Length: 207
Image 1 (cartoon, helix red, strand yellow):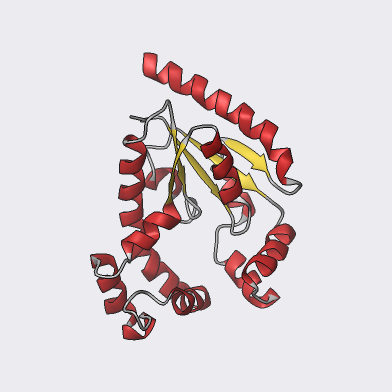
Image 2: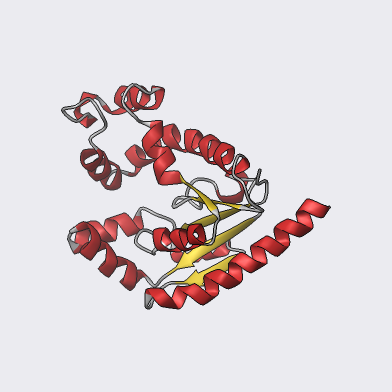
């Protein structure tokens, strides 16, 4: 059971998934907000029913599940729609992440939360012991997003602008991991963070 929980966040295309996979390779359990968000609006769920009530049946795919591409396009093009969607999903995600981390074996667990800053930061997640921000320059985000998702520059800019700014994310950070270079450059910093978190968790456990 892990009650020492690290929140990992970062902007879109910052490389959060790469970072959390490295922690998993070190034996750390990672609870992923994206996975929890998909579960929150799974077919037949109360969350999906609430989304349909808010946005209409046009956000459903042919199989009855959420049409994620249509929903994303709508949410990123309309701030009020994005906030309405987040108000449905975020509370469910917070509960699922906390439960998963508490149930995890090991000295500490990680909650991977892309929208941690946007979702209320420390006030919304008072159970986080520390927050690790995966940081990249905006130009790197834009280039990665266009290459990864095949979107044009305009949509990439809107997706970045819809999130917290780089400075807002850094303002909530206890730890910062810069991920603007080669992936193998992450190994040393992640190993150091893992040692730090294990030591801090041990101190908390003894207190």
